[in-house]
Image 1 (cartoon, rainbow over the protein chains, first blue to last red):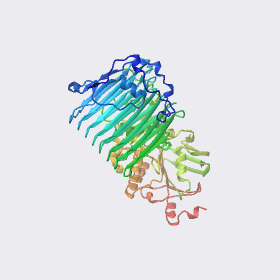
Image 2 (image 1 turned 90 degrees about the horizontal axis):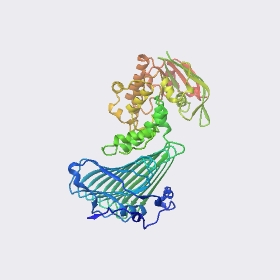
Image 3 (image 1 turned 135 degrees about the horizontal axis):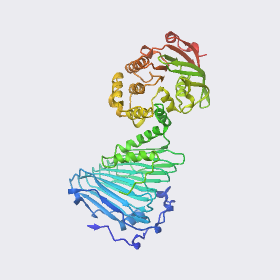
Length: 371
Length: 242
């Protein structure tokens, strides 16, 4: 087994690859130019895993999974400095209860590298929830990576919940790879962070593999959420379905850029991508850029993207029932997110998330206290 | 006793004047039918009364028991006792009917503890499938379900005056009977005043007008009793449209 975890020292965080700039397409619209890596020192994230009882043997800090070649400096830094949580589910094993992991960034001025590896062996099933939290005043950077490997007929549900404080940065990576007839459901809920980016990629390597990617993001104040998604079809009869819904308020920003790639051998595949954004204030900004790259015929693909304010007709309808504009807007926005919230698996925190979205709409200060 | 009084109402939509001075008074328990051909301004009248964005009142007045309705935002017009049944009810994904009604009760300071039961009773009365109460408002509803939902909301909120825009569009005959009968009942049980806007007179079998007004080219050109509707059935609007 390969242990990824290594002792940290100042030298080790020095990357071999260059810092990217916003002039590169993949970093377009990002706030990468504001990040000075040298002003942070290596730190540690506090990782807690909820009581597992008999399932404790599933979790360790070593893994056999080979990570992909890092795509950029941040993934490289994570690979070299990772604090690894590895979950290995054996062949035919079905884990009924979700595994809940909470990463807490407790110090300012540090950069931390949590890495989660979920290896679901043949025909196994597991649900993992990964939460990221920090206090509002914590000025640090989290570079999380999650590797999901679903073997033949394995079923993996992963939920990332970003409840970071409003001064914390996140530059995250999700790389999910599915083999024949596997099912991967990747959920992301982003409410926190000052600038929070996730590069969320699924790769369907085995015939009949299926991936769902669902996200809810809601930025207010001066927050920015930045998503890059990839649905990479590399085998026939694969299916992917992406639904990302976001809202921006005050002077917040969000970017969604998504690519569906159907490779030449991925015949009879289906890929769907929907991104919808609500702009709730005049000063807020959202961008949505869907892309298709299809190298074969005989596939079914669609993408849809919208950016705009709350629909006037919907607002008027509710107001004509004697509902105040504020409540009407809240109902419409919660309804808009309902489609995503309803698809989330039944895990703890979900009802709490609905309340947090609601509180954010009402302008209640949203900083999550450290738990 | 409540009185909705519309006086010399002039309404502009997209820089075009649609209503050219409409006057009409509706009292509790009365049913006023406003009939007219397509493009006469019927829907504009209902939208302007409720304050729909894009409908600008440039002169005239609308009062409810002397209160200047036009000075109020839409939601306060509803609280004051007005209710609009829309011709094409808006779909609101993710917002449940009961949730919307609960919010409407909240602003009225009404207790919501009896709301579920009230909805159940009213749903049964008009043949509205109670399962739809927990579905998104109007989303994937048939034409009949939409108008039953609209009528259900009216009976749950118990307004003083209802403005009903083209109840019969997109509606099968059974649903029309159920909805029109329920509104007729409300005029007797709750003394509801009704301003019903319609192209055809088929809903008058259940919802019986006391007054019929013909609206053409943004003006009421004739007002009379229910016999006017019968006459229109025969003659059509042609003689009034010049």
